Amino acid sequence: MKAFQLIFSGDPTLYGIIYRSLLFSGVAAILAVLWATPIAMLLGLKNFPGKSIIKGFFTALIGIPTVALGLFLWLILSKETGPLGFLGLLYSPGAIILGEALLVTPLIVSIATNAIEAVDPEMINLAKTLGASESQASIAVLKEAINGIVFSNIAGFNRAIAELGVALMVGGNLAGLTDVLTTDISSDTARGDFPTAIALAIILLAIVFGINLIIVIARNPRVLLTLGRMPQ
Image (tube, rainbow, N blue to C red; front, top):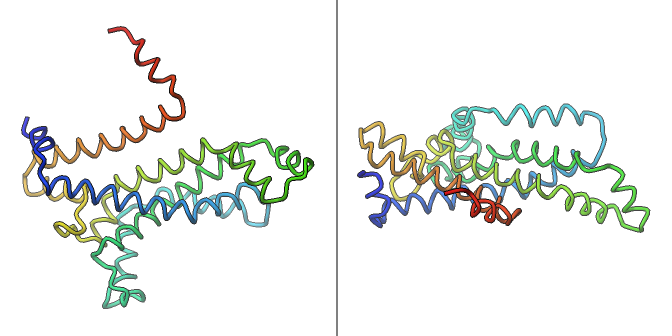
């Protein structure tokens, strides 16, 4: 099949697209984690008026259409009409990274908040009784919720690398600069280059499933033993 031939051909254009997809989505996920984790800690550990409204707001934003977010960012970053147009970010890698980071923030906040709230609330009181400070008690809760927090980070990356609307609208799918897996799949399909589109789709699925499998194995090495015992 021609799609598999393309994957293993060593084509620099193809692997450049893969590299940009991993780089943009990885940086976007890291940025989102940096500001989403403190928000999740605040929502998960503190009680204050309007907390449920804020949580509901982030939950609702999980379903925001990527093209809608892309449009808003385009209007903001446009040199003609946007208040941030002077930054020159539109149709650049920076615009894609910013857009994807904003896109995945509600997902990371919601999952991480639920993970933190699932920890026994008595843990904080116990930690303080043993002499821990407020920050040390919070860290203890984070350690207990680490599985859910890691899952939120993975979900954020998967959402970023698989999205199309933001990357297309603020990145412009410029060859060698802002074209990524999803935008190239779309453009290749539109012009009838189905082997390349299929090859890129296979690579995208392999990245998503591969990362999840690595994390699962890292958290539970016994999975490998289980797979090894499967009947042939």
